[in-house]
Image (cartoon, rainbow, N blue to C red; front, side, top):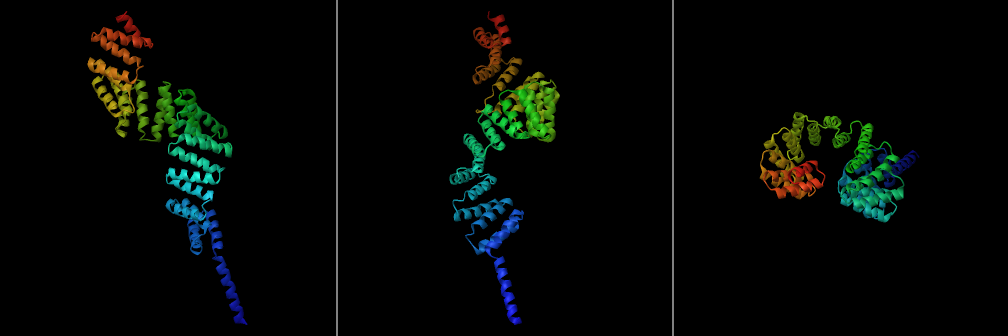
Length: 409
């Protein structure tokens, strides 16, 4: 009798043990481990499920999610591929594979997956939103705008959707549309510092500088160490000719990022406009030290040297600037200011050549016409001189008007 009871108990225990190790039981444990963020354990349990049941769709999905959370993206892709093989019309798995591709910066692949998910589920709000981000990352901003609009249409007012559509409009140079979307973002989420910042950038691009200052300030209020907000507020103060305030902001930007070459360059410009030439020179040289091919820094250094009547040295820096500017980024101001330096050295042929190049690049460059006209006077080319001075005078340049009255009337 005792032997019979022992055999019975053994069989019951064995049945319980077998049942505990069944694919279903293991999968339940794996799901629990995943929910508790025990991803390594979840992977181990899912692998046991797959060993017993090679077509276990849920196990591949859960293991893929766990690999994703651990940053093992290649392994996650492999598991999602297997899950999709067993269930090709499960939109969520295709969507999650798209998320992995995003993490791997494979945006073309992620866009493809989000598109497949949308084909299966045309009202998949998250897929539209993520595809919009993918389109943004590959520079297809018009497609991104459409997807963010669809996200808003299906999902309602979503601050992030308005924000990212605003970014897309900004990239398309549609600054008014961008501002409208950033307005909506802020209305939905008043503490959204990036929305204030990017609205500030958009306002800056349409020369609406005072409101831009307000937005950059709000960004800084929400995030006191917001590097780019200090930097761009500094640039905006420069535009408003409030150079002492620009100096404070650009100095703060440098404190937050000591190798910020652009901040040094624009700080140098602020000092230049404040007639603090030694400080301008120091900061511009630091900018060039950090970025040896910094064309704008060479240009500003040329301006500083010209103000100090060091024209030969100024010409060298203007030339470096022009050499660095390529054909896609013509720089008439560089030729004009080098021409002014040549003019100061009585090198009339070189000055004439530079003013002519500046005019070719910018046919409405009044100052270049005026200066060329003045050089032509010294070269006794009255007809050409009067034509150039009249051109500049007609544009309202006072220097040209006075020279025309004196030499051509």
